[in-house]
Length: 84
Image 1 (cartoon, rainbow, N blue to C red):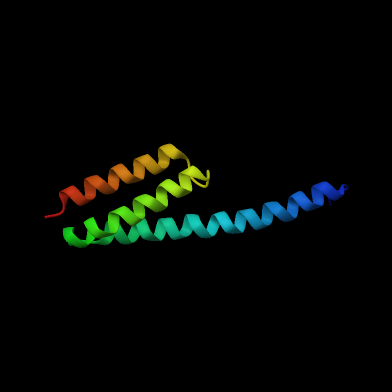
Image 2 (image 1 turned 180 degrees about the horizontal axis):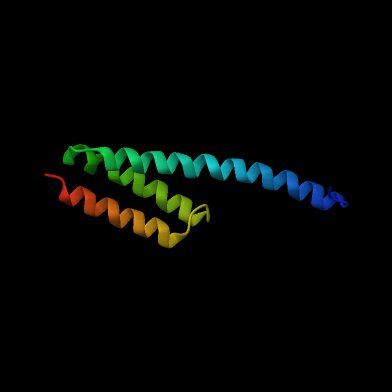
């Protein structure tokens, strides 16, 4: 157990932040999964900007790495371009 007040507070803050970050990361993963599952190009093109915005926000706040966001956006763009 922590011996200092500040370390106890830090543990509390870390728990809260972790829960917050997990929620947004999971939401992002679900959105990406949903977009990848689409087979209609028109629908995918409509959904892509919102997913892209979500990825950029998460990268900006360091919930995911900026290169990971770039890689996901790139692979999603390729997926949409391959749709007929």
